[in-house]
Length: 403
Image 1 (tube, one colour):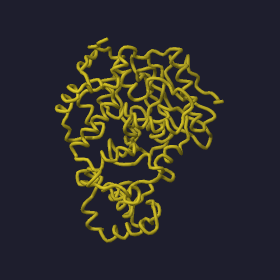
Image 2 (tube, one colour):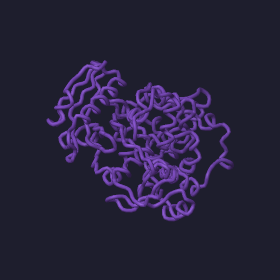
Image 3 (cartoon, rainbow, N blue to C red):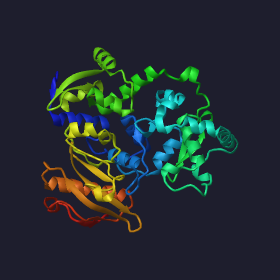
Image 4 (cartoon, rainbow, N blue to C red):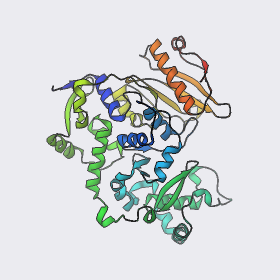
């Protein structure tokens, strides 16, 4: 059956299906599910804020459910993932290393992520550092002392931290693991001994085309301008590629209620005839692919989101690290939370519902179940909600013990 138009709800469901967020996890998570989820998203953005679980773990939990935090670091140390600059700093499937190699070979184009002047000014120290790693093995920034004159803060990294980060951006070092979420660096030639740029590297044009194809698959349904943001592409031949993909049957144009013409990836063509209902309730990380393009989130979900952890407290509208609430195909609210690890309590400072959302028994029940699983995964034995809409409080208790 041919479909030429979709409702907004159907478009949202197709996007969530592509992202692995349409329905709850089918069973107990396995390590293979973690890799499958990352491949489905193409990228897993890294952020170190941990007022609740760190962002990469949050993104995975929303898709595969409860799992040991160690699985992600294990996949990295086993070489199934690698780290590099993609959307921002990301975990990326190992097979996609060729897509990012051209950036490593031209690190000057990375802006602040690579400082050529620093590398030239400290080339003797950097050469000595590379020799140290070759002779003694992988290192962390923490292995090197901080000069006494350094002030605290990311803007005042100690010299060896800068050396390591620049070498990472230039592709001379790779991250082979994390210890307490701190990067462990080793020589690229030791991690990938068989890699040969002359044989394996892709041209920038071929790499861009494949990154855009990954973006189309991971978004499922999209406007042209949504594609380039996924990998932060500045020179993306969108018009030519979209025309080629349509000709080859890789994508098709389809009209969407309120949004106009969008493109639909061919992996979702078969879903049009029997699109499952959205049944998943999840808390999303601020760095989830569904949220990270704020303009896309506004257009597709009518959800206006801003990360406020870098905003002075007095100027925040919501809170420090606010998690969007996905409920059965729509972004219906947000909450500001903190995991009190000392007292094994997940503290919800406040819950907000979007203006058009009506509190209901189903919303309350789904949210309580989701919060319980979320808290239990982080080791909480109880949960406290300090503030929530009065209408929601009829269906969602303000505190409960977690079995």
